[in-house]
Length: 344
Image (cartoon, rainbow, N blue to C red; front, top):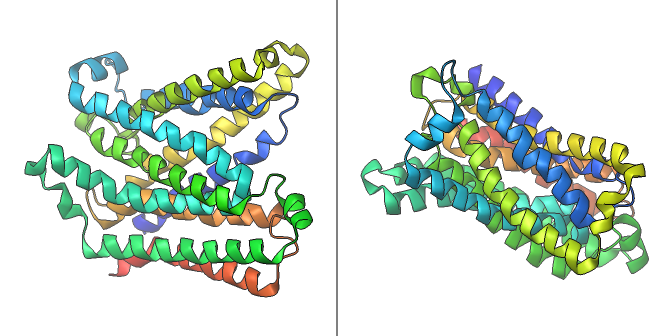
């Protein structure tokens, strides 16, 4: 029962994340780089900071936690956050060229697999005495493989969509649709986005031990990862503001109220996935199969809900029945991948 409750909480977070691009469509008269960094202030700074405070018991502070903890682990957590930031940038571009459904499917699928595997592998390099590779059990590997199969099936549906639709139909569904370019960008986004879970692995002990509620123990590490990612995104977005002469976006006071509201909503929906991940993991056995696969499960559910949104937003409109059948099969496989490891 506890495992089901944990999965439900993670699923709610995944649904929120998959919905975060909907408010962005309501933003007016701002270039991509302007609204991306503003929503990032909420998604990667303010909300993760507030979340991290939940892990701080009375009489203590975050400053105390970060200054007294292992400086190596803290800086490695931030470093992988910086690398994850590159994935975040290209992730947005994958949506642009492939749409919400297919773009998130490819990027998050790659992220799910590599994020799950890379954490224990890299930790083993620095801390072999902890035997982190022991986490990669047969059940974990099978869970990752089934997730990749589900992603591959959805990728086939995307390829079928690209082959059957006319250029006009593609543009009607996704304005800048470009399948070859989008696939390359989505794979890069997935690889770099997997660094998020690596950062969480390095920061897993950055909390106050038994004084911190198990539900909130990964939130300080989450804040450090998103802090690193914010730096990467801020540098790129401000560069684009300079290059494209879009600094004036921030001076358009007539749209600030509207845009700030929808940036806040987008940021809150995005952060919900990792807040839900922290809460959901507390219902799993620490270091067990479900705990190790929790990040992979989150990404798989993100893909499921992103494709649901893709159907709602009519990104698959005009596709053949066979294409839709393949898409649905892929979604079902991903749902199965979330539960399968528990029965192995």
